[in-house]
Amino acid sequence: MTQRILILGGDGYLGWPTAMALSRAGHDVHLVDNFAKRQWEQEIGVRPLFGIPTLHERIRAWREVTELDYDILHVDAPRHGPRPPRLPPQRPAPAVRHIRLKRR
Image 1: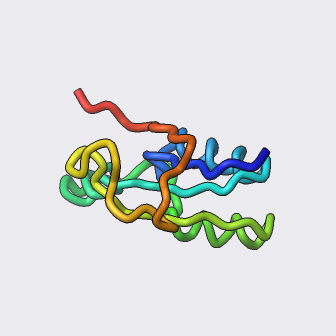
Image 2 (image 1 turned 135 degrees about the vertical axis):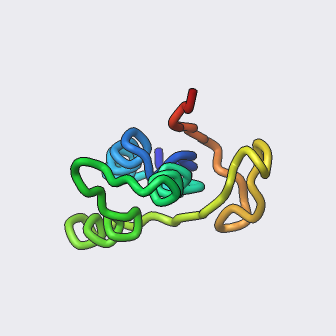
Image 3 (image 1 turned 90 degrees about the vertical axis):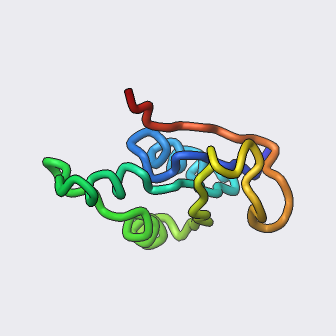
């Protein structure tokens, strides 16, 4: 059974592969991220040891290989609370997976 699944933290090292696996399994995947890690890297002037393509670049490559697609929503989830505003296509996802980096 196909489900609409919302992945919070879709740009991360766990969110992205989770999204690929669920998309490949035939689910309707929507990615939410606030891109905080990328912003922190810019603010302090560091880069990952191995370059990580942007989420948009990875989705473009995913489309080319699989002909499957994702929706992206840039939301600062903690600021908006448990239900981010105006999720596409205006109805809630029955399954939500929150994957995030925990800063100490």
